[in-house]
Length: 387
Image (tube, rainbow, N blue to C red; front, top):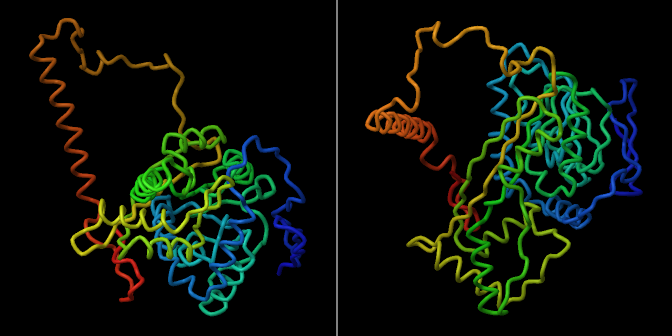
């Protein structure tokens, strides 16, 4: 269904189909970035290498888990919504395709976009083996600045790809433009608290062995910035939430091996070369500060989830200030003036608010899973659990 000109990372693609073309492939960068943080060519090489290793599916457990949790949010969307045309940005080996199957969303076609041709080949092989209930097309082009035709798709999802994007505001604006009115965007990426244990270990190791701190890890987006980016891109009803996924590893060396095998090695332009002495020190510090009695270490991945809708007249909107027609006094809610409240009553009201907030927090914690979600097959190099 797709012919690819491999003359560049963005590629020139055209559909061998009579269907309307949903994409206008980029022939060159149309935006001039003021700051380029990530080396996209290096990241593409990382992902190609991971796909060609022959063991990618063994190490893709984090991406598979995050994608499943992201698309579970579709279960809260009213059943009347149909998402006929779907786009998966940074599709990898087809994680979203597998998670979307069997959800009854009225999907007719899925477009998988990835800068790694080897990842797309993995997805094609997986589909050929397991089958799929809807049509799937694959486009080899940059998932950072894809040229999507305006108002052409109903759902855009992206999982574990946006934290390698240089122009995140531009990517979100392109997604917003590509959505039809009342279309949905779902995104998940790693946030600023990811691998906090490893960051601390490298800082202490650098101070001990080099006398200063160098860059070993990528800069990541905070939760507050993520919400601002959604609003700036023009999404309606923006929602941002976060959770921390913790994975246990036997030691730091196994953690680094898994990150490399996932295709998540550092790809910043200003990354520093890590010598053996620094790595030995970082591994020892990581185990000493965070290891349990058996020597296993935790790795924390902060996942930020984004939800945004393309504006539509049917969506609820706040009324203009001062447009209310009913007084609280007419409802029998005649509150005394603040200055007339006795001090004891004011303290009692504050205590009630605090108690209510704590009650809600405890209820939220009780709804979260407390134990490991699953355990991988018993292997010496496998993480112990994910929670």
